[in-house]
Length: 175
Ligand code: FES
Image 1 (tube, rainbow, N blue to C red):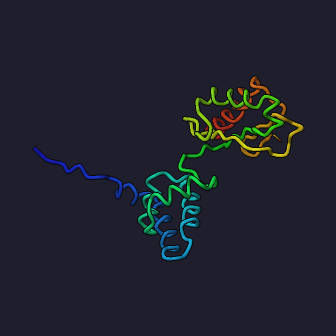
Image 2 (cartoon, helix red, strand yellow):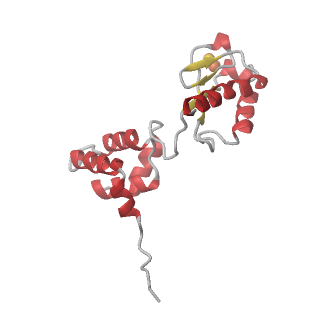
Image 3 (cartoon, rainbow, N blue to C red):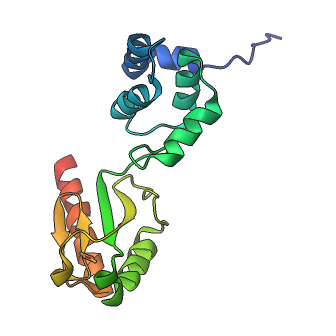
């Protein structure tokens, strides 16, 4: 009987993915510099789209900083995320004007339709749901943004058509 060693394939997989070479270059560029962690995380997130535990570990090893410090930075700065991000960010304004005009119900409808909670990404990778503070369009309350588009005076009943627009456009771009 042949015995096959149960070795981790991570190294082999990384060698095939050019993003890991970019990450190594980024770490090499900043290693040993004062305040290297934030620019490295920033550039790593540009390369990978988010900062999952594996990338955090590689940065920790490369810069010789504790993993707990990296976790603290990612948690503290809203710029960083350990979660995969959807193609479209949905921002539901929960500022006062929007809230009193029913933004909470709109948010609930989005959660229900997308089957996700706030700061999570839909299973199809299309949408990440976020809440925002006042975006300066209170006259249109309640306001929701999807990517660069802004929708105002919404009710929960408007949500299915809005989501469908992006789902359809995605289907057409893949056709
Ligand atoms: S409170 Fe939502 S836009 Fe001002």
